Each structure stands twice: as C-alpha cells, then as structure tokens.
Image (cartoon, rainbow, N blue to C red; front, side):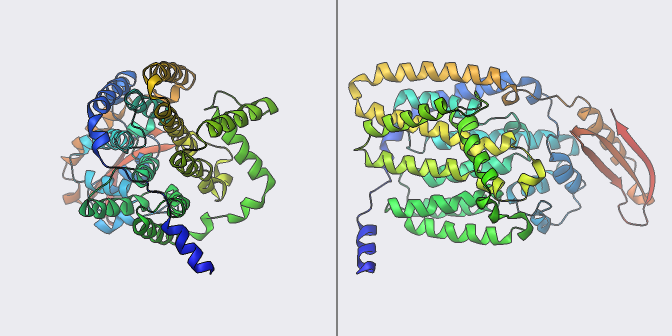
Amino acid sequence: MITSNILKFLKNRDTYVLPAEGVVATRSTIILGLIIFAGIVLLRSWDNFSQPGLYAEDSIHYFNYYYGNVRAFTDILQHPNGYYNLFNNLVAYTTAKADVGLAPLIYQSVCIVLSFLTIAAFSFSGLVTNRYLLFISPLLLGLSGLNHLYYYISLTFQMYVVVLLLLILMLRRIKSSAPVEVLLFILMSFLIWSGPYSVLAVPLALAFIVFFRDRTITCIGLLLVTVAYTLSVTKSTIMLENIFKPEILRLWGSTLVTDVFFMGFKDSVNIEKLILIAVTFITVFIILRRDRLFLKTATLLLIIIVASFAPLFLSKKILLYQKILTCHLLIAQFFWLALILFTADRMLARWPAKQHLLGGVFVVLAAFFIFADNTRHPDKWQAKVQEAMPRFLQKVKEAEEMNLAQEGKRMIISTAGTSTFKAAAIVGDRSKSGKLVDRVHVQ
C-alpha cells in the first residue's frame, strides 16, 4: 500500500519544463540586457580589467604550480585544500602552455566569459519570462548578485561561479532534445567536480524529484555524481556535528537575516526585522497561494539559499576563517535575488493588465538598489591593481631567454600577489642538481 501510494504520488507530480518558444520571443530583450550589463561591468572596473593580475590564490595554487608547462595532465587532480576543482586546474594547466606574459590575461578572460555565461544562463533558463524583468535581471544578478569583483578577475573564485552555473542549469525550465540533455549532464557532472559547494546539487535534486516529474533520471544521475565527489573530499574537512551546536545555528540564522534577506544593509537582528521578513513571506504566499509552480520552485530556491552555508558551517573552514567571507555569501545572495525576480515574474503574470506599470516600477527599484548596493559595497567593483605584474612577467620572459636549463642553473623571480600569496616563477633547471644563481623580487 505504501509503495503504491508513493508511485501514485510520483506519477501525479507537476510538470516543470516549458517549451522554448517563450524565451525565443523575448530573446532581443535578453540580449539588450546582457549587452548593457557587460558594458557597465567593464566600465565600472576598467582599471582592473585593463591591468590583469594574479588575485586571491591564483598565484600559489595555479600560476606558481603550473608555470613552465612542467606538469602532467593528471596534475589537474591536485587538491591542496582537501577537495577537487577540475575547472580551475584545467584552465591553469592549459594556460601554462601559452606565453607566460599572457597568463593573467587568460585567467581574467576565462573569468569574464564564465561569469557572463552564468548570468546569460539564468536569463535563458525560463525562470523569468516578463520582458521588464528579463531586461533588468542581468544587471541585478551580475552587478549585485556576483558580490565581488574577483568573480570577474580571479581564477580562484571560479570554484564558486561554476556552482552557480550548475544550479542554474539544474533549474532551467527550457525543454531540450535528448542529445542536448546528455551534453548538459556531462557538463554539470564536470561542474560538480569543480568546486566544493556543488554538494548543493544533492538537496536540490532530491527536492526536484519530489516536486516535479521532469528530469528525474538526470537528477538521480547528478545525485550519484555528487555523492562520488563528496566521498572524494578529505574526511577531516567535514564536521557534520556542527549542526548540533547552538552557536553555529545562531550564526546561520543571523547571517540569513542580515547578509541575505537584507543583502548586507543591516548588521544586526532584532524583532522588527524578523516581523518584516515574516510579513513579506506571508503576504507573497497569500497572493500566490494557488500558484503551484511558484510555491514549489520558490521552495527549491529557498533550499539553495538556506543550504548554501552548510559547506562552510559543517566543515573545518569555519574554524579556519573564524568569520564569514564575501565568497561564502555568494550563492545565498545570488539566489535570493533570483527568488525576488521569480516572485515578481509570477505576480506580473497574475496581473497582466498592470505588467507595464508594475514592471517599470520594478526596473526603477532594482536600478536604485544596484546603485546603493555598489556604493555601500565597493568590493563588488574595485580591487587594488597589481602594478608590478607587467614588470614581473617581463623579467620572467627575459630569464627564459638566458638558457639557464641548458647550463644546469635556475633563477627564482617573484612579486607580490594578493595578501601573502606571492607570484613566483622558477626559471631554468628545476632538478635537485640545478644550481640556484639568483632570486629576484619585482616591486
């Protein structure tokens, strides 16, 4: 009896996937929004884009490790932090085969392209269909959702962007042909092995199977891939017992309120804020209580938002950092804004006669928020330029022309990177018998 009821429930699940016609009809609006988004991103951070560097841990984990094209392809499996991130390592491995002077530019170009593709993937996902919202969504998600400039200029930070892309692809509502589905499954599997936050695919896939009849086989496959990835993570990294610690749960809840629901504009929790959040959720539920698609999809998005902190709070990283960094907020903030867009889209669909007025008002409010958010959080658009990087790369190229390897000699050239992470190139003979003839630090 229980088995038959479960089968009946699964059989009667809602349909999630939509045909592609609706997105095709609004393609020009999407493209216009993406063009304006790309232009603003380049203009607001032109100093950094015009002077590529090696930011965050790009130097020690990627440039320093792969420089000289001396690594085997299997070295993309290196995991110094206890987890695999294939995408970043594959980029660094490939970049090492090019002229050393192009390395920071290649890293940066990959970052820009992947971030842009991620934003475009949401626009074409079918989650939002209203023209006004499709126009503003790239700006809202790209200028505020991606909450630090490093997502556009640092290879290290791509391990977070790949997870955004993975989750967006899982949530897409556009119907695809069987061959395309297979290719997307391969891509999503690769993305799962490219960042620790990909474990979020597990709760999302499970909820998707319960709520919707579409892509059940795909979700089961992604579950298996994610479990395999999770089992590959160094055991000491995971601390599931944290879920029972009151201080962790309090931090989890307060972070959701201040840094997610209020997007960092508030730094404390009080009863008034909690009442405002509760009233907002209840009001939306009352208005859209008969919209089954909204209720189920909103639940999927909320699962991502709440669970996105699990990889931090339920691991030793919380002990390492002793605080919540901007990168730890990315997924929750990004999908909170996505939920707002999706909610607005379902409301505008409920009142089609007022979509021009309400859509226009939403665009104005979103533009105002983007401006206020970027003003309050300058990390979203500016970072210290690494002015010594061109001189460092030129010095490395000059050393490469000295035939040090043939003479059994080597030279170490370094420069400051980000924080304590120096960029360093070992030029010449790297063997134990190689003689170190000079150390040069470029300032």
